[in-house]
Amino acid sequence: MDPKVYINGKLFEKSEAKVSVFDHGLLYGDGVFEGIRAYSGRVFRLREHVDRLYESAKGIHLTIPMSREQMVDAVNQTLAANNLVDAYIRVVVTRGAGSLGLDPRKTTDPQVIIITDKIALYPPELYEHGLKIITAATTRNHPNAVNPRIKSLNYLNNIMGKIEATQAGCLEALMLNHKGELAECTGDNVFVVQGGRIHTPSADSGILEGITRAAVMELARAAGYEVIERTMDRLDVFKAEECFLTGTAAELIPVVECDGRVIGDGRPGPITRELSKRFHALVREDR
Ligand code: PMP
Image (cartoon, rainbow, N blue to C red; front, side):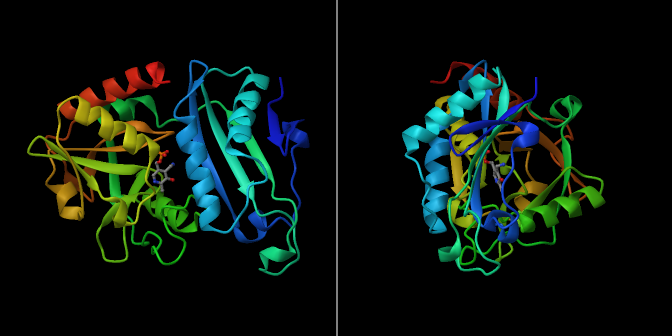
């Protein structure tokens, strides 16, 4: 069966799902998006994703032409139409078609697009053995530019970081903020374990406040770990006992090497493994 793609209230066959070449989402990366997961037919933290989508839209002066409740329904409808129980869901809202100038007032009809697909995780052996990462030379967006807390369609900085990673033979890269502090990876948040405590860059480090990050912090605290959000740098990663990344697509993946430094004993650590287990249980139980 050809996948069905939601565009503005209607479902289209994949080959018929199209937007205008004049859409400012295409011409300028003018829009916002979300990546969401469904597990066993239940969408994980859908309300949080929808809220972040609307907050991102507000950040770029984009009015989404439907309510948050309607968006929740549209995601569930699209999932059901595709008969998917375990899925990755991409919600995109573009500014809409306009003239060949930047002015958003010349655009009409923001496009609300919902794509569902099978999930593309990192290869399974990397969850077992851990990732090697590098630090990208490309700086994470300055908060006074497009704030990294906004999940906009403008992902070029992150794509540059991803290219640097792949050119170095890695699948992910750390990105630093404009002050040289640790921010996050190109598509994942970063955590380290030091002295049995869990540390992650604070929201003001120039990060996307990941929904997986929030879930893992809750889980860790409930399991009795101290979780500290603070300013961090690369040395915090190099000298960590354990390191892991979190994200909707990645879930929780261990990191065992960064910029040629072996982290801990070079194997995924016990706290990473425990939190990973707890996260897998949570996504199947959560509301
Ligand atoms: N940081 C960036 C830059 C991201 O794009 C993402 C989402 N892929 C994340 C962190 C993780 O966020 P979430 O847990 O909400 O998927």
